Image 1 (cartoon, rainbow, N blue to C red):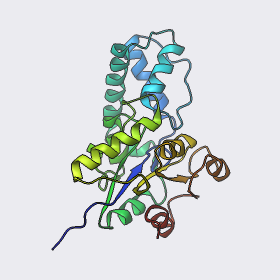
Image 2 (cartoon, helix red, strand yellow; image 1 turned 90 degrees about the horizontal axis):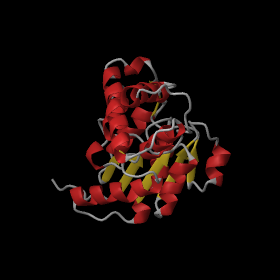
Image 3 (cartoon, rainbow, N blue to C red; image 1 turned 30 degrees about the vertical axis):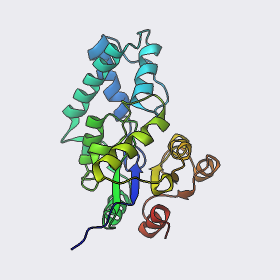
Length: 235
């Protein structure tokens, strides 16, 4: 039996694309900031479509703390600890978005399709959020682009592409890379590298805003598996 050489790389966002955990990010950051710096969280920046490095830098700055690499790493260690404490009960704090499991499963059934992440989350936090609903099973989390890498979201895409190419021994052309997310930042990250931008209007941005950002395809959600397949595979 011959195997099909990988030819399509799908890079998924997590929050408000595959899962939704209302208030969890704020609660984890509050616990992390208190443990890492002894400070009560009183202000927070916009989280949507941004990376953990950008968010952490802003949170520290807003609370009068210099965002040194040492302090950022300390904050992240506490953030990871907060997510680990929630492991096992996180499924009660949120839900998988409709169609998420079915879409991941359907794409996994196509030879040559590799699925991983481009997410603002840290790797450890990503796994916890997805595993709560079994959504990690069709994703290769070892080759993703994570929010620890850069404050600039577009930087995450080439990192994920390079890791996937190295693992699979193949080059993914720009138009063979598909970024799926719910914010204009996800769309920008795709377009910046010539990738295909698929947006889902399941977050705080509506379909018109996502189209205006330049998304090649905008879906109301992931429930129409055939539409997801067409958006990703082009047929």
